[in-house]
Image 1 (cartoon, rainbow, N blue to C red):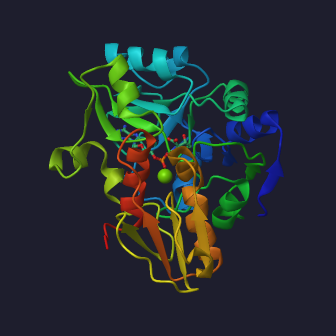
Image 2 (tube, rainbow, N blue to C red):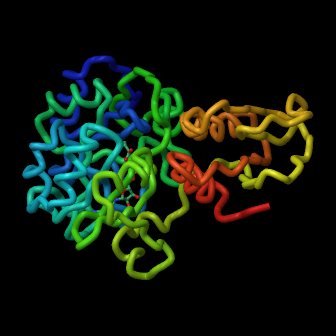
Length: 319
Ligand code: TXA
Ligand code: MG
């Protein structure tokens, strides 16, 4: 099966309604959409990505008011956060509605809900009139796809269609906030920053992912993620980078001999750094480079989410 290139939201919605798999752009990264109430479609989705079945999927809706299609209860914190950040790069975790397949939620009693802001994603969701499960559109473990060509590098022949539009994307996935407890808990840092969340819900806290408790709550976070074939090493500011054409470097600080590297990128802002990060890792693999040195992102604003992805890309290694 050749993956169809499409640019019609109606066609994308029809494929999803028929149980098919369609990759589409969102303002964070590309998602791989399937009907969240259709077990056969979800089984194909896990297979296409090579995704472990214990990693729950985010359910996408066309509007926050449609939450009863996916969740059984709304909580005060989720309501406040959705009012402030939906549509946008936020996922709230709520008690699950029975109509959502337990395959989508990996057997958990909760469900992650997101209303994306990207016009193509919203148009597809409006036309599909279904809750759409959409993990990032990449092979499991790899960097997420932020262009349709990257999506096809991983998924050509494994999915029915890809919606071919690239857009100025945030480049880092949504912030996942568990809203089922007394205080909101950030399970995955993302494009909505901790500073922004605390303006709405001042008691929002970061999860301690080391704790057994949190592992049970969001098991997928424990799998390897965002890793290219090249070995990724995080640099703090002071360290020199070995100048070698088999190596790559990206960061916000220029290098003296940067042009002698196999791939070299300096980003003017942390937002640009985040937007280009996954594509940079993929380009290093296209050039078959052996090592990628990444300057540690500043640990504030969206830099916190980028730093989290850098740590995961490096498999925890630090120079
Ligand atoms: O920006 C995004 O969120 C993108 C776009 C496509 O919307 N999607 C995305 O999906 O990043 P995925 O599957 O790559 O990541 C979903 C994350 C995982 O870390 C998963 O463990 C967590 O959300 N998650 C989903 N449902 C959950 C639940 N019920 N409880 C806790 N964590 C959940
Ligand atoms: Mg993913």
